[in-house]
Length: 260
Image 1 (cartoon, rainbow, N blue to C red):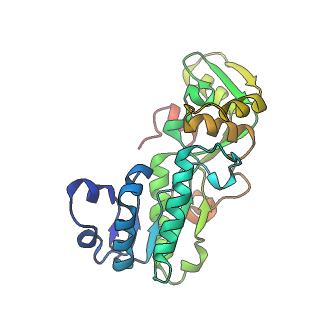
Image 2: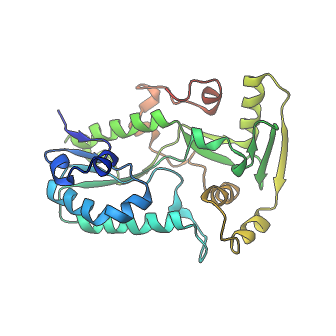
Image 3: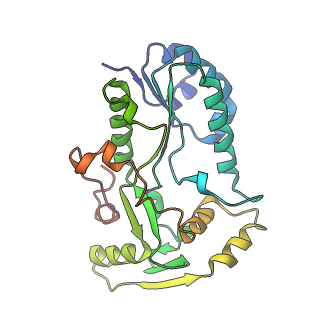
């Protein structure tokens, strides 16, 4: 049976040494935020290199920032992630460790908020560009299941080669129109108003707004069509034909079944 250090964040807060806790593990799943990784990343990478696990999952869940085109004004969170990913891969080069960068789209729990133009309380749905643009989103527990399945596949010599080092999953690729319709069905209210703002104007404002949060950048990515994973994802690899579990949808989440 594989030994898994599933949450290195515990190591940080307990004060235990990375070497002690990582000793003998086969799989490491990093759930540190970027601020912590910048603080302890060098120490952590050195310990992982010494432990030499078979699989290491980067803390890279979320949108696919590799597609970003915010030249000169990219949010600092993604700038940090680029540095962390490069440093980690360099530190583990030459070891047996397979470094996996898994992109999951939005978490269901972070999707339905006004910062992305989704205001359920007011029943108003505002897109940058067409309301038909889709957002990849995955329930948090489905992310956990996917990581577990990828770990199993990566540890099995018969299937290890089928797991790429960079991959994307999406429990659902959903549009503003579809979110609006799901809210209507779940809450029993009339279909809400669909509104649209200028993508170009909003994006230009980000270039000078140093207070903008990452979600506002993601709103732009949605408008640019860069958050739709419909045509490129590893869903069938981790959960072929939904034979292992049923992907939770945004409507499931709204009905209260999205968190467990």
